[in-house]
Image (cartoon, rainbow, N blue to C red; front, side, top):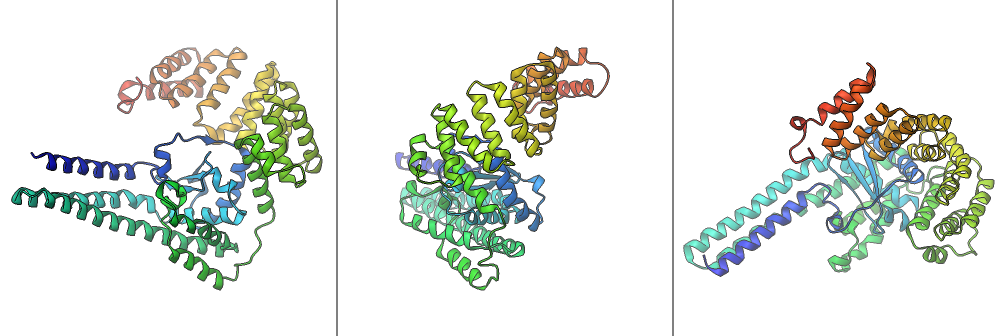
Length: 461
């Protein structure tokens, strides 16, 4: 084989690797492939996203309970869906958003992808694109072998790749247009304005002029064209909901969440520049209180949050923040009351109840440990797959002297973490010590699930 032909075959492998990377789960966000993904959990932010997205899901005929939403800590504007009805939202979509309408527009668009089953068809389109690219390469190889001209291979390879990629990108552009059409339909059904989708497209249109490395990930994962913007504008010109106000509380909640994310994610100095002392709005004071906390000024932060609580005493998020400041400021006894208040005001927020449980466990009194187990049981309604929650259950049970129950919880944690050997050991020990009943049956189930013959190949044994 000539060196020239060998080099062309290397390029073939590169092209195949490119398609394989595109087909990988979650690869819709190209930036995630080379960067460490940091997910965040925050009850207030998650509550806002649910309030905005669940009406859209229901309008689209999608069960909200079947969509898993994950927040990614990343300043870039982006949101995308992956297989299994998983919706990923960058915090930058909120931090850089001009209003709650832009977030609503993106959520409506992503709902269109979910309802349309676009991700389900993506692997087949990937496969066909790869086959078309390989076909062009093989034809070029035949021509090269017949003529002895390695240029024939290069021409076939480039032509096949260009054709395959052209058809694939046509497919993705069609998906984006379909999702836009679905989005404005859902928004009209709800009586919500589509102007947020328009303003986001305007904001991203300038991305076309940037080099690929500088383009926002949303532009790269959602092919943009002026046709999409014109479609949005045409719809708005005809929609009777074009200037409909957002539902009460949406904009205020968005401003508070944006300030909170700015306070926790950005450096305190950046927060103070963005929210100077002259800004007396509630979101600005919220962000500055968080910046004080992150700078180690616990007393100042508590005083500022107390002032906010005096104005909005029924805000679970403010009580939660006060509890967090005190707990992480090594004052757990003082943190108990605000966390208890937050839990009472937002009983369906698993993250708040988990935090309340952690304070109760830290204080360690038997009555508090039993109360903590009640809070953790409530948390399990939505967080049963969280190893951290099972670890807290194990700690509380262990401190109460309930070692078989602690072993059972640790077995749950170990299996979720992929440590099958530990899961088997702990489940076997729990099964031997637990009385007949549901817990012993669960220990048996865990032991069987962690048996080598029942494990997916390659998992810890």
